[in-house]
Image 1 (cartoon, helix red, strand yellow):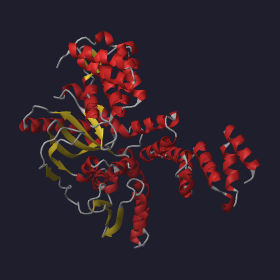
Image 2 (tube, one colour):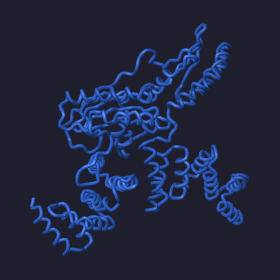
Image 3 (tube, helix red, strand yellow):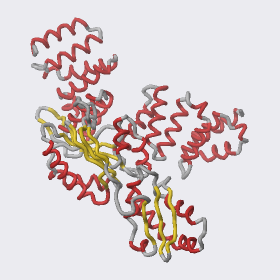
Image 4 (cartoon, one colour):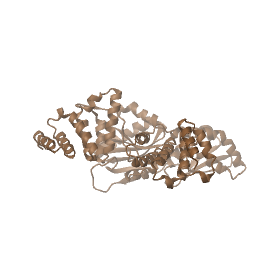
Length: 493
C-alpha cells in the first residue's frame, strides 16, 4: 500500500474533501483496493452523503464483511450508512455490535437512542399515504403509454407496470391486461402476504380520472376484504410480563404480526416500516372490568379513534386481556393519526392510553395527557410504563425512561431538577433497577439516589432495604446492618 496515499486520504478527510478520496480510491485497480482502503472509500461516501452514497457505502462494506465482522469501526460505518437509509433496525444492530467492542462509546449510544426513537415513533419516515399519492400522480402521467403497449399486445407491458408498482409496494407482483375497451391492473400479493392490506389501500385510493379507462383489482380480493382469524388462549392465566402476554381472546387480520411480537421478532413490522407503514397497537388497562364491559369499551374506542383517523389508519385486530385490551392498527400516516387522538383525548372514556409499535424491544408511548399525582412528580402513565418494564426485566430501559422523563419534564417547566432528584418514588424506582442490574457502578448510583431522599425515609421500609442492599455490595457492612435494623423498626412487615 502506498503510504503517501494514506496521508493524502487523512488530509482530505480532515478538510472534508471527500470527493477527492472517492476519486483517488475509485481509480485504483480492484486488486489494490484492500480491506482498509475499501472501508476508507465507504467512509468517504458516508461523509459526502449525496444521493446514492449510503447505498454505495453499504455495498462496499458488505463486500469485505468477512474481514469486517471483528472490527468495531466496520460495524459503526455500516450502521451509519443504514441509519441514513432509514434502516434504523439494521443500523441499531450494527451500533450494538460496535458497542460490544467499545463499551460506553458515546457516539454509538447516541445513535442507538436515535434509532430507538425513530422506531418507537416513526414520524420522520415518508408515510405510505404520501407514497400512494405520488404513485397515482405518476400513473396518470404514464397510463396512456401503458395502454398503447397493451393495444399492441406488447410483452413489455406487464414488466413496465411492475416497475410502476415497485415505486410504492416493493416486491408485489402485478399484471396489466386489456378487456375489450377497458384495461385492468391486477396487484398480486403472495398468499398470506402482509402487504395485502396496503395493496387494497392503494387500489381504493385510485383517483376518478385513473378509473376512466382502468379497473384496479387485488388478486383474490376483488369484492371482499380479508377475513379475520379468531384466537382464544387455552392456557392458565399468568402474571403480565409484557404487553400482549395477557391476551385471552382476539381477532386478527394479520395474525403473523402478533405471533412475531410475542416471539420477540419484528421482521413483518420492519417490512411495513420500509413501506412507510407503522404497524402498532393501542392498549389501555381494564383491570376489574367484566368481559361485557371490555367489549363495550373496545367498540366505543374503535368507533371514535378510527372514525377520527379517516384513511390514515386501518383496523387489523382487537384483543382482550386480563389486564389490558388492545386495538391493532396499520397506520398509513402517523402524524395526523396521532393528532386525531390528541384532539379527542379528553373525551375518550379511559384514563390511560398507550401507543406501541410491534417491536418487542421498543417501549410504549403514553398518548393521554400526563396525570399528576400527589407526593411525586411522576405521572400515572410513567409509573405504569415502569411497572411493565420491571415485569419484563427491562432494567436499563426503565432507567432510560426515568432519565428521559426528568429531562423532558424539566425542559417543559413541569418541575425542577432539584424536585426530581429529591422525589422519593423516583429514587426507589432507580434503586430497584440499579440493585437488580447488580454491578458496582449501579450500587454506587443507588447509594447516591437514596441518600438524597433519606429525609423522607421515615415509615418506608423499602427505602431502608434497598439502601442496605447497596451498602452491602459496597462493602460498607456496619452501615448496612445499622440501616437494616432501622428498616425493621420503621416497617416491621
